Length: 124
Image 1 (cartoon, rainbow, N blue to C red):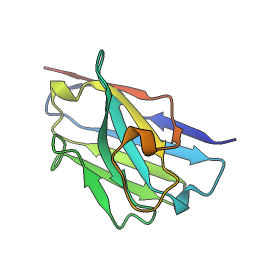
Image 2: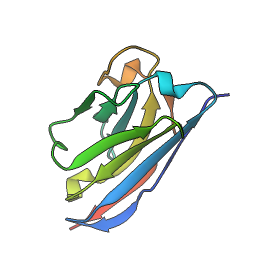
Image 3: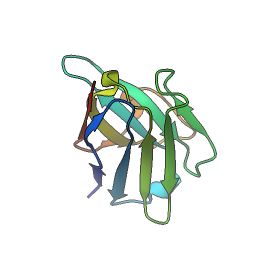
Image 4: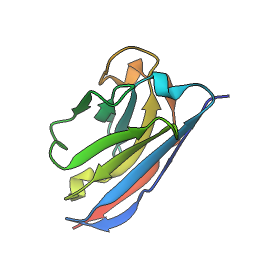
């Protein structure tokens, strides 16, 4: 059974940092791209960042470029999202997803396996 589990969320002041982690199990996730998405209350789930199967390609939403960094450790089947210079508008539930496709993609609909999310709250 496929499992995707996020961790690392919490409450942080504006300007601070958090590191989210995602652990995947149940298949060889090192073969597939992974992504982070976020959903604020009352809003749709939005793309944040994604990384190709070998880490060679990454993509970011414009709103997080230069502040967030996605990375992966295929030996551990994990992906991380380092979030620096956090802003109150970064407050959301953050979701990790695994896509069974080639390359990298930004669309929620194209990812196949999802975690339950981890909450990030940035206070002003």
